[in-house]
Image 1 (cartoon, helix red, strand yellow):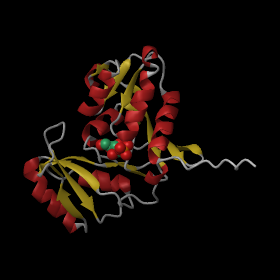
Image 2 (cartoon, helix red, strand yellow; image 1 turned 90 degrees about the horizontal axis):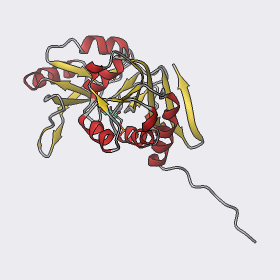
Image 3 (cartoon, rainbow, N blue to C red; image 1 turned 180 degrees about the vertical axis):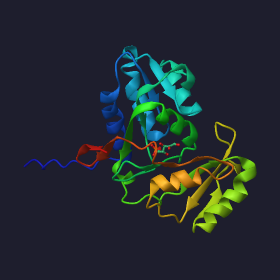
Image 4 (cartoon, rainbow, N blue to C red; image 1 turned 90 degrees about the vertical axis):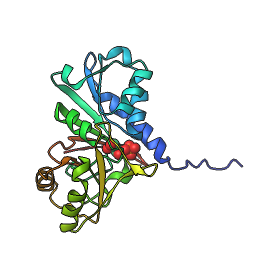
Length: 232
Ligand code: 5RP
């Protein structure tokens, strides 16, 4: 008697591959596509390479993504060379049911927000672990000018958060823009729009990792039963 076949649940890596491939349906032939940063986007870049002859190229949100795109033969344009982009594809550290996100786990939040702002449609690709009711459980990345780090850490403490300087090899991590990152825990971000508006204005803050003004309009969520499309 043959054993019934059982399918094992997809790994997080397989879910990332699924949503990376699913994002191809939003890429418009003949155009330049906005490309984010991170392990999920790396899957999208691999998928994009299979249709590279059908697109003009990409605007990239980090040195890391630029390297990957170029290594696969996809031309990379500077943000300023392209007036606007039809679509920006990027991952998230958290996304809520309104399409508001926390981003910056890969320290690329500033360029990500710039490319998102020049794009008409933000398509977030994520595995289902990223979907949350309220933002704030993932440590919120904030890019700061180094001389402001201590002051910004104090400002987050005053609102009940604990901010720490992100380190790499024992030294403060330096972003693609030559700045530092603080990661803030202990926040419950009930009103992402006003949180982003207020904290973005503190002196020395370059970019806050809350993406509310540049939220996603679509999320392709990798789940055990396949790709779920959320629209906001
Ligand atoms: C990088 C980001 C990424 O989109 C975010 O960290 C998600 O990354 P991953 O797909 O590796 O989980 O904001 O700055």
